[in-house]
Image (cartoon, rainbow, N blue to C red):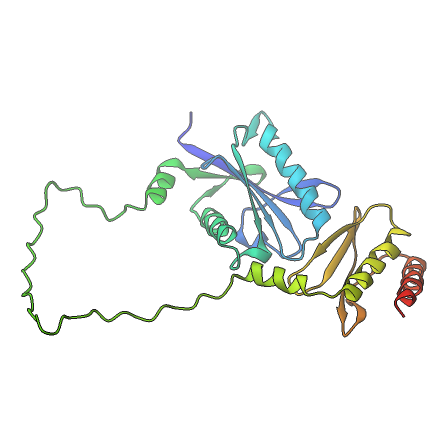
Length: 270
């Protein structure tokens, strides 16, 4: 067994293709899903940029799961054959969700660790260096017993008539966590607004057999198909408002058909 551990970084492309890329933190772009096989921790990291859609994230996760089970073969070697765990990180949740933030910090520490570049975009870590950084005990003295200075006893104030009361800071009011607040806000959507959201989705299903819907933090609804995003919309003052990039790359006939169907259904509310 060598005194080094190996790692490799992949870019998840459309269609479920993974491409080995140069090891660099700069590879983490908003429109990418990045996989890292790390033998030093026996983990697989799957990082999603904030612009990645649901379908792209699911496709990347399938590739990550395959790598976890089989590793990655290069010539006569296999990188990450005994990977134990997939650690998935969504850039949108970093800084908002504690667990996701901790995973990202761990991931960033790995990406910035000292390494040596080999062929085929493989890098290697010195195992001894890895152990030192993980223990976080660089400043521990190696000497024997060290006498500790005996603390001087502090005089005790006697105040029988007026007992000393420690000054306590008033309790801080902790606001409800953002996920709960968002959930409560979502529940306040009235029935008429919910009906309009449903009308959009029904109109889309007339043109697409399979769609995936996700609700964003800012009350936007994102709709995707297997080939990529379809549209993103919100309801502003009772009216459906699509984002600028909605229906881009999709036949104009489909867009018109969806609009006509929605108007037809929306008239039922009048």
